[in-house]
Length: 153
Image (cartoon, rainbow, N blue to C red; front, side, top):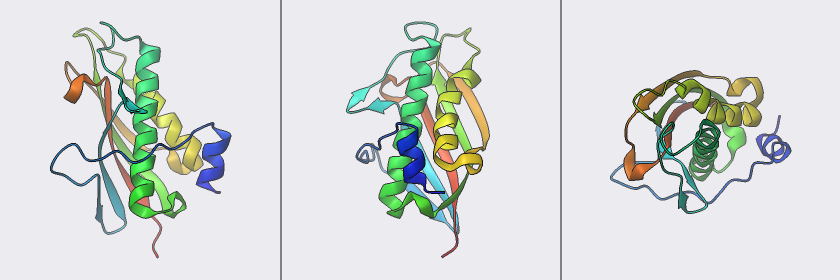
């Protein structure tokens, strides 16, 4: 399996890595695990903002989650140099900004999960939490943090 071929088949192009927006590492390695800081819904320099059920539809939020996952892959590529070094996606934690009565966070986060499955096949399936919130940094709609395992050298 070649991750880059999988991405091409899925029509996914990786953007340039986003700079860290604070005093943290975008990717932090502990043994064979890579902890990826929260990646926001920023698409080609445009912040995808708003709250689901207020001014953003579920479909728009799913796209925002997809963008977060693609940004995650970009951060991983910048850190590793080659996404084929990744063994599997272990877990993602996603935050979805929504109306107080919005309960479809899991449906929104499927947009991110699908990217990892497209990239890594069955090794892209992961444990997951989808949490609703009333606000995210910069007014973003979705933020996704993740844990990946890399192959031993």
